[in-house]
Length: 153
Length: 147
Image 1 (cartoon, rainbow over the protein chains, first blue to last red):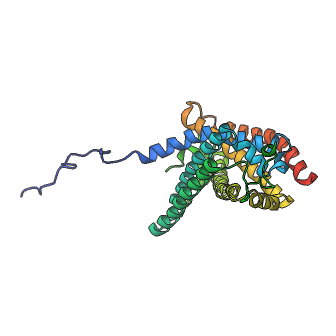
Image 2: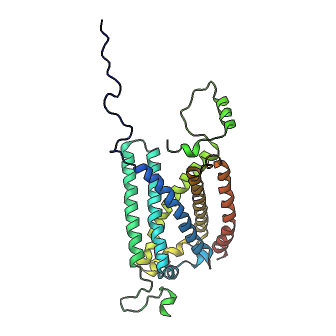
Image 3: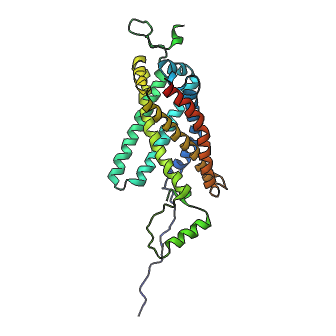
């Protein structure tokens, strides 16, 4: 009686991680921590300047926004905050969807919504920051009444 | 499991108590461990989701500055009432928790002693939160209710 032939386990070359596998999730994890560290400074600075300094939230109007975005400093600040916060937030929601949505189609649909919101919000916000006119004029060339006070000075 | 770092307790005494409670019981297949590790993780998710939804609205309403000063001012005026004012206070509370608990997560991940002190760091996050929220609420609620 001859013993049945048993194939040696892993008779083909076996590697746990092939070169085809990407490190996408590791970079996603790392991005959350790096962007989070920057966002702590950007967002708390944003809240402090807009809610604590001067008259706080009650001072908020077009002139307040115009006064900030007349300066490249706040344009760059808000642009960095917009991009980092949107990507950080979308990636966080992606993680939550992956954790709780069990059906493939549910995950695909929800993550598509998030991707559309991400692209739309980043494009809209970036365009607004770069095309913003702090001293808008009407069709007759006169300054609009709600324009910032520093425009007429 | 992605959440191991945050939800795994490291205290031997609590582990042995858990084992004693579960002896003879059928494992329920849950990885939730309770206490500071799990609840900070739950709060981090809820505040993160809340902030994300607000961020979408916030970029949309701020974009009205590009439509016209009147359009922007008209929408901002509708926000100047006690209901939205309290919502703003809640939002700032969510942002501050998410920010400092995020630093705690980074310390757990990157600092060699982080996992050992994750509970103490959770209560430190709570203390920093209170220290920042008190002056903010004094300032903000005076603006909201002071007219």
